[in-house]
Length: 149
Image 1: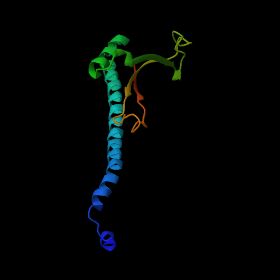
Image 2 (image 1 turned 180 degrees about the horizontal axis):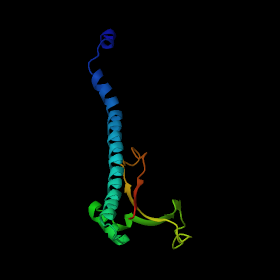
Image 3 (image 1 turned 90 degrees about the vertical axis):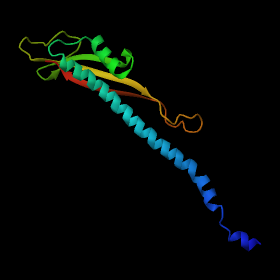
Image 4 (image 1 turned 30 degrees about the vertical axis):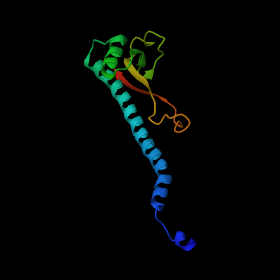
């Protein structure tokens, strides 16, 4: 009888599957989570690019910060507080102090820029306490900079 049980492999596939399945499922969900994270980051970049497109389309009538924030909020569903608009300029190709009102010399070439930064929090799919909580929620930020005419 002992010899007969030693040669019996019925049910071995079921046991192997039961042991391997949890590992394979966690790997599959981790891959899905990774791709969702990249898609989320690409969405943030798309929203900042939407703001840049809006600024460029405005031509010489530079939109206000509130208008830029509203455009991003309307297209993304994010609150306006998730959109940060920063103004900067340089003089003769060198970054100038943002606290000053202009270039030091009257004949300097001044170029103005607007940078739009969109920030949101990505919460991973695998956020199961004490089981699959090895990846914390991440704050994702993307930005686009536009040179004003």
